[in-house]
Amino acid sequence: MSSERPLRVAIVHTADQGGGAEASTYLLHQALRDLGHDSHMYVGAKRSDDPHVHELVRQRPFPGVLRAVKWIEGRTGWQYLYQPWFRKLDRQIGDVDVVHFHSLWYGRQGFADVAALPRLTRKYPSLMTLRDWWMFTGHCAHPAVDCERWKHGCGKCPDLNLAPAINVDGTRFNFRRKHRAIQQSNLRVTTVSRWLASEVQLSPIFAGKKIHAVHNGIDEQIFQPQDRKQARQSLGLPNDAFIVLIAGQSVEGTAGLKKGAGEYVIEALHASGVSPYLLAVGKSSQRILSLWGGSGTAIPFQSDPAELARYYCAADVVVAASLWETFGRVPAEAQMCGIPVAAFATGGIPEIVQHEQTGLIVERLNSAALGQAIRQLHDAPVHRNGMGQRAAEYAREHFSNRAIAQTYIQHYRDEIAHRTGRQGQYN
Image (cartoon, rainbow, N blue to C red):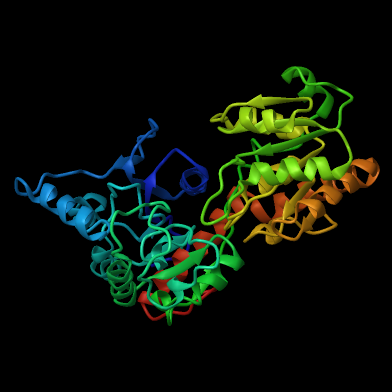
């Protein structure tokens, strides 16, 4: 097989639109097609009108089978026990060069069946991109604070309500089922950050598997620097204010943490000693603005990335107080727009924000330190603007969607070469 021949790629994911994971996966699909490859997505829920995105064909099994399966799942806590359409995925995708699995969990109902992975990955050269913990825990996408049961086999779960929630503790069974499926599968594993790769390497489920880190791609055609004054004027924002933007920050505690990220931001703003204009974007924006009590604007969830980019470009600083973060999409998008970031050192964020070069990184959950970072950026506008310029350059070099797609293409070719006994670039 010529290494230059366009590839036929099947991307498997929960949906083509929704949150950050869906955006990243769909961007990869688009970039592959733009680069001349025949990419198709196969999803549990199709939300776009893209003709190259296909919802899994849900063929009905024998009457009552799915009802019986759901009854068993509800009384045992066993997740996604039987998804017949996923087991027949190869019938739908047909003859392709490589299958790229992304997130395989989807709420309580599910769409994928991990038991099908060994057969599918033996049939096709395969990659799996991990964006969270779900593939190596007994049920959750993000474990509770200080929970390390996923390193040993789960069971006696401290929080069954973490998404995707289960009613009964079936975590040990789920863990063993995933362990068996992954150990019997022939696939290449990537994660969205080096930090997440280090977590995966601690998991018995992926023991013996080589893990590669490939960051998410950002659409550089949309997220790029714009004139700040014009952006503010078009959005009706004050021209002379020091504007701090936060996006996607909840006020609800999660995974054992009593406070949400939004509350840490408010504490940091008060600790900073400055009085910024707060631009809060996302579902909790109105509540965050109420907690702030100062000047600002609440913007509902932005589904239009071009509009979100304008808001980034109107800000002086983007603050990210994420409590759990495997990559750091908001910091990456902000930097692509030339905006410096002040952030907690959570998960993959220190890989995204270069401390004292493109922004400032402080200890996770330390509101006072985050406040000091905001104050530092407020007091040094020339230095802040220089950080913004470096941020845009760094982000274009490291998170360009086209560059990330090229990296995946090399991984695809390497995996195909591996199946034929040849040497690849990444191995």
